[in-house]
Length: 171
Image (cartoon, rainbow, N blue to C red; front, side):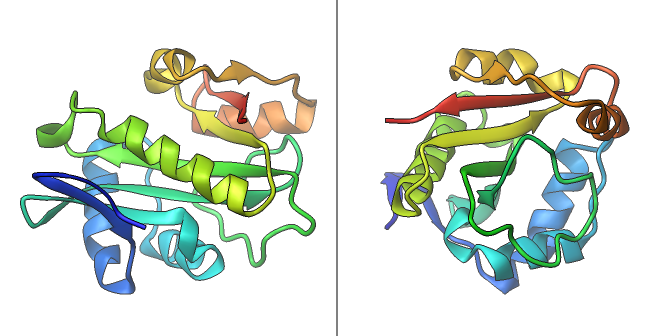
């Protein structure tokens, strides 16, 4: 279940990682703050979709993802309560890599792990909310904008004016 290189390993996230995840999220995404409770709930609801990147023995990244339904983003910093059932897609809530780990393919490894989780759940679409800062990255990964409702546009605007709901089919 581990995806590793000599100096790194993606492993299942544990509750002990949450303080580090929250700190990394705050430093990587200062304009999009989320409480530790958000990450803890996602870990509880979808443990196979929550991974920690260990680089030289330190948490250097994370993936938060889970089953989802439809083309409506979870509002920023909001508890879900439960996952929708049945799900029709796998939602990437967040991928963050510390500056020391960037440019080494770790984000692409995380996306591959999200694909594995989606396939295991019988889902063939990855969906995410991209902020203005990450649109080019996600486009390079093959994600394209979805047609969205006015309700979804209001949710996206709470992230930032250029936020976009993106999806990509997986094989």
